[in-house]
Length: 193
Image (cartoon, rainbow, N blue to C red):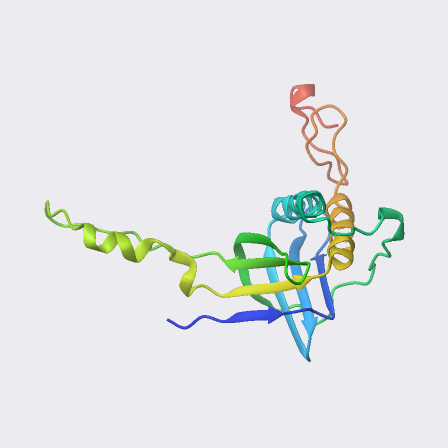
């Protein structure tokens, strides 16, 4: 089975964004460059964790390798909507991060969610020869690879945080998201809040 690697090293634009109203939003990572536009879908929690882990990666790169990081106040954000058309290439299953010391860049890799086929074994045979084939199950999966400077990474982090926080506000009692019509709050024994 062939797979595609969508590489942007570096992209003209790399952002997290959403499509749809709060409560029904679909989250995307979108990369543009060289006349190409690639959008991959992922979960809100993946966007939030990606921003958090990128911040940790930059901090560690500064501590270990002396990488100059831009000040937070100096970061100019990208507030534009996602480029259209937003066509989902694949749904992200795994996110990978790395710091390339030679080029002082951050590498982000979004790998498609794999479809695992159930394995049916017949008989009592112990066949350990197949175990070596499953070491890298995502070798045949599509992926989006982006290489960013520390400045571009900081811009991505700030936008990703804004996108995640732009959803429905949390209930002050239980923390679950509030719909425009309210919600059934467990702290009020199921009464509308």
